[in-house]
Amino acid sequence: MGIRDWKSWLRRDDPREEATEELVQALPGSKSAAEDFSLVDVPIQGGTLRVFLPSRFPHDKPTLQLLQPTRHEFVDRYNQVKYPGLDNWSHKTDIVSVVREVVEALHKPTAAPAVETRPSLERPPSDRSIQAPAVPDRIDAVEAMSTKELRCLDEDGVRDLVEALPQVTVMSQMLADLRNTNLESAERVRAQREAASIKDAEAQALR
Image 1 (cartoon, rainbow, N blue to C red):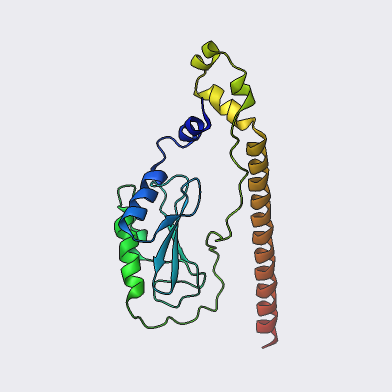
Image 2 (image 1 turned 90 degrees about the horizontal axis):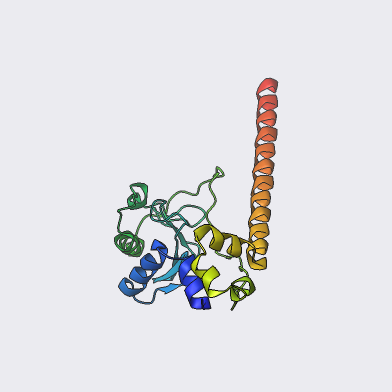
């Protein structure tokens, strides 16, 4: 089995690939920004709109974020797009229509929203994407198999072979490190809020 066949198997029936192709064809200048079809960059007036397609797309809604600071009624302090069409997202929603509507809305003049001073709990995906390990040109364990063994290889067997790859181990560790970093950040925010609450209580007691 060649490397292209393995790549196709790994992402088979991945609706993100189809969604990426539809966006690139429908919106001039758009391009895929990730090998796993999780990112699509759409050019807009004055910058770029990045579309994040989650692993469970289309059941999970996409995230739209501008890669440049923008003041607009549909854009929050983290440059994420808060468009009504995304709030009503379902697996049947047409991604191209939603993105096209967002682009059109962003091009329309709007009153700049008030600056949000209260910190939000929500954080957008980073536009500094993690560099995943390269997909190998060959899998030694597969090359060592006989034709009979390959024919008998089921989905669980393929998954075991893939999970044993050093690249997958490295990526798993990267994800674990990212989770730990997020937990530490959440703990710091919680501690800061608790400290602020204590100070507010002390100030109220002095009045």
